[in-house]
Length: 121
Image (cartoon, rainbow, N blue to C red; front, side, top):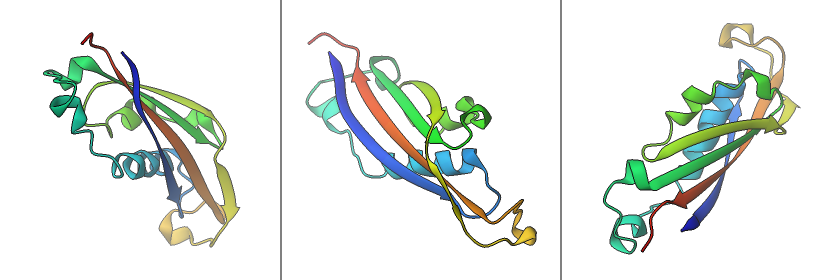
């Protein structure tokens, strides 16, 4: 059937400069803005884990550090794929070593989540 919805999210790690924490927050931000009740009520899907495919694209400053398996765990349903790309942003913040900081930067992640339906109606 193709794509059903695209949602975007933003996540930040203020201390620790962790791209994964920022990416997880971005995914949670995106999915917190959507209720996909139409999947069962309109499309009559019975098995959301088999009939829903979720593509996550996460943009961070250091994509090679993204743990795609950990990011995928943030999604409650579907067959999930995660792709990390160069993007996001770092901004100067506050350097507090007791909070786990390596420097004063804030890591910003942006995520796009595409929900695809794999069912013929």
